[in-house]
Image 1 (cartoon, rainbow, N blue to C red):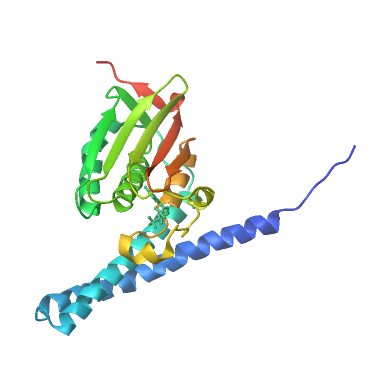
Image 2 (cartoon, rainbow, N blue to C red; image 1 turned 90 degrees about the vertical axis):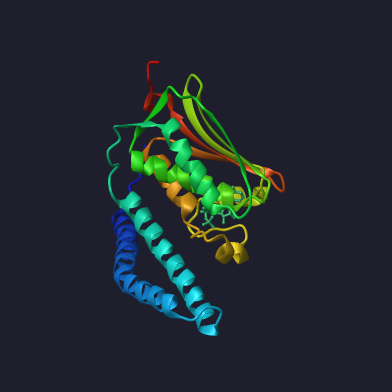
Length: 245
Ligand code: ADP
């Protein structure tokens, strides 16, 4: 018999240091950025329209907002990584989230999208309602960003014997297969050059993945380049409840 033992204390310590570092940096950057943001918005309001100064302030406002989104997402991610699973006992009526998701899609899309909703109205999901809402919203907003005018986005919530599924399907640009395994890595993007135009932070799918892990779920991604993508959150059926009708 061979007994093999390895001391992983150092690895665990290093991993903890990395998490703490990210959490601290994001936290420290937040306050100065809020101040800068406030002044830039004030100056932008005072600038005369259609002048070079007004355009510069517009750029500064949009870039500092982007930085704020990034910091918020980094903080969300480090919270998800470092804290134990939060309250898992909210009963979420996914049906009730659909209206909000529609609105978020409309706000994130440039141009028109057809949004279809197929929802099992009696099926509820147990978990942390804020986290679940954030995961679903990330997927819905992505669908809006990576589709074009006239495309369709379908939201589904249903169950079979063993699992419950929340699905966002789009008829958008799709993703080449070689990118699929890496999509949930932080800052991984199929097209780096689009990063500034889509307004995303590159952290959305990493956040979705972490939230699903905390709910004993997983993310499945299917895509057809040029035709569209389907992102499915799969939950164990034990995390759901039926509301009597
Ligand atoms: P981002 O903020 O860049 O959208 P995400 O983590 O949310 O970051 O997504 C990572 C990458 O996955 C995106 O940059 C994009 O290339 C790709 N992606 C995500 N959702 C879709 C989608 N619905 N259709 C096509 N590509 C997508």
